[in-house]
Image (cartoon, rainbow, N blue to C red; front, side, top):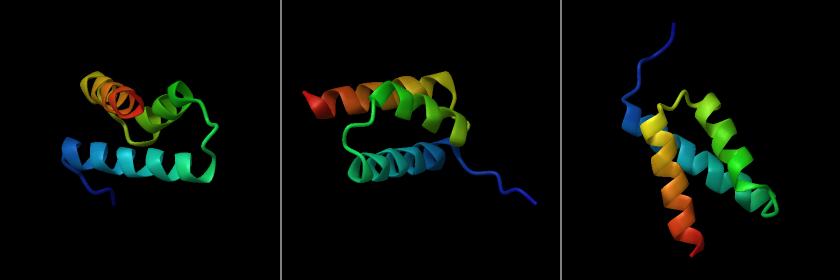
Length: 60
């Protein structure tokens, strides 16, 4: 049985997962990670845009 999670929880899990992936392999390409996170955590376009801005601001 699957559990329905609030979208904000999925976004938090996606951020944690991306951060973990970057720690393991810092040379990974951010667009690929964002795409994989979107599929893995079933993120809506709005959440994908948020993640993109979040990591862009973090890199600046």
